[in-house]
Image (cartoon, rainbow, N blue to C red; front, side):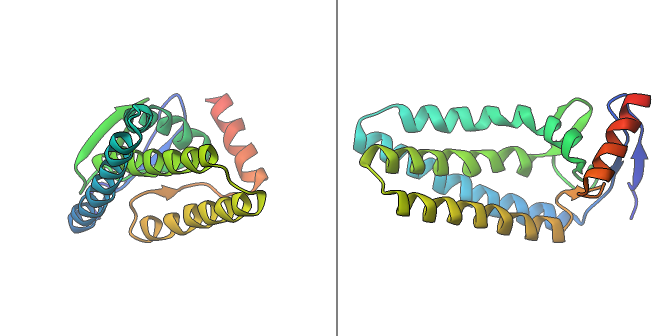
Length: 172
């Protein structure tokens, strides 16, 4: 597919690749729906509780996109640069728009939901069930985007691979 190459950068080399524009379109549609649900949930809860906390969490969730380039470098993650709607570029890493918007639904609704449960009182048993649900959801969430190339991991997950990658980064 055109657009596949490796980019060399002082922070380390990473692959640039393309995906089918239809994947980008459907990613935008799905993420827009999830964002709309999160925004409605936070606004509804803000009005119901007469509190600005849900709105503050909603706005703060968008600012978390600034940590994505660090996840990309440390976690050896790359996003497609061709066939997608370009979004934020930080540390010479271009992220598609859907990646920036993911953080709104990924953090705002879930964080406020957890804070609300804690404020209302939650048993340890319910807390561990909720934690297990969120952990399982995070793993399940990775499968579909990885399958369609919405992001990819370009080094192994083993400590040896990670150590070799960090050593290569230090050597330049």
